[in-house]
Image (cartoon, rainbow, N blue to C red; front, top):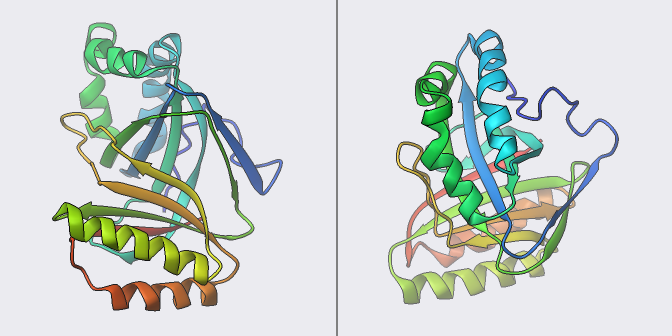
Length: 224
């Protein structure tokens, strides 16, 4: 498995098992699910020199991401769970609108580098701070709903089941946006922390009993 180091060459989580993320109201969190092609290293060096300076002038800040260790639900199997930050929704969408004027082969570069490139971005409705501890079991889950009433009941029961099995909901994301060509738009994405695989399995057993009423699809990944 190739890990996609989209942090401009800095070592990933080298200093500490715990990473703290801080977002102000109006800032934007990128969530990218990626898989690399075999020629990733040489082609990404070009991409980094051409696309990254434009993104950073438009307020992009790369932040540490994670390998995907295991797939527990769904049929999508990316290699990496990458995060990023933008100063505002306007800046994030300005980049999408203007990047080809600066890097004409931007999208072709991505196609040459990545087997999978799926992006969802979230505008923060309020100030938020969260920590991800790599020493724990960290799970990212994405749900698509089929109907609102059933899904809302499922969400409430899901959160209760997590609490009862001593899971910690680190992050809960809704109302994400996804651009044309990179579309990945779950209705609800969570990152949860578990003390052990046994605790997570106990939670999964409870969730399985909830059934799939209100659900259309799910992806779930254990992060590393």
